[in-house]
Length: 333
Image (cartoon, rainbow, N blue to C red; front, top):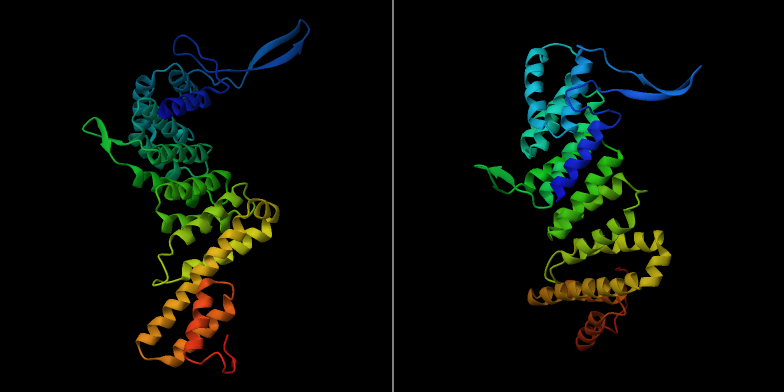
C-alpha cells in the first residue's frame, strides 16, 4: 500500500504541467490568452520537436502513461550517448530513469541514479527532488519494506533506511525535508526502543530545529529516553541529571501543558527519589569500604538535596544511629 501510494504521487509530480497523448507525443503547457476572436488556450514553452528537451518531455509522458520500462529503455540509450557531455538535461534524465526504476518496483536500483543526480548535479532542479525521493524510500525501509534478494523481498533494509535519512539531513541542512527526516529517524529509534540512539537523535533535532512544531513532542520523548535508560541506583545517574534539566526546560517553555497534565510534578518526584536512592547506595558502599567520612558526607548531601525523599528519611536514621546528626553541618553541599 505504501509503495503504491508513493508511486502514484511521484507519477503525478512527473506529469504536472504535461498534457499526455495516446501515443509518444510532445508535452505542452497552455495559457489562457485574449485575441481579436476572444479568449483561447495557447500552447507555450513547448519544446521543439527533435530536441533533447522534447525527448525529456516525451519520457515524462511515458511515465505518466504507466510505461516505465519503455521510458527506461529510451533513457538508457540517451544517457549512454550523452553522459560524457555537458548536456544540461543529464540531471533530469538520471532522475527520470530513477523514477522509472521505482515505478517498476525496483526502488533499490533507483537509488543509484538518484545518487548520481545528488553527486554530479547539485545545482540542478533535479537535486532537491532526488533527495526527497531518497527520503521516501528511506522511510519505506524504516516501515519494514525489505530489499529484493533472488527476486524476493527477504533482505532487511532498516539500516539502509536509517542511512538514507541521515544523508538527507547532511545534504539539505536546515530544510523542511531535513527536519522531517530528523524527527522521523528519532521516532523510529524510539518506537524500536533503541533509547540511546533515540535520545541522541532527539537532542540533535532540538538543537537544529528549536522552533519546530514537533519540539514539544520531541522534548517529552527525550526526557522519557533519559529516564528509561536509568538502570537503578547501582548505576551511573548521568541520564537522571539530563532528564531533570530537560524537565526544567519543558516546564519553562510549556508551563500550561505541564501544569494541566501533572506530568512534570510526578516525574520530578520520581527523579528526585531515584537520585536520592543512588546517593544512599553510594553511602552504603562507603560503609562497606570502612570509609565512614565519605559515607557521612554523602548522607548529609543526600538530606540537603532531597529532603522530601524516602531515601532522605533512611539517611537521617543512619546518621542518628551513629550520632552524626548532632554534629555541625559544615560547609559541604
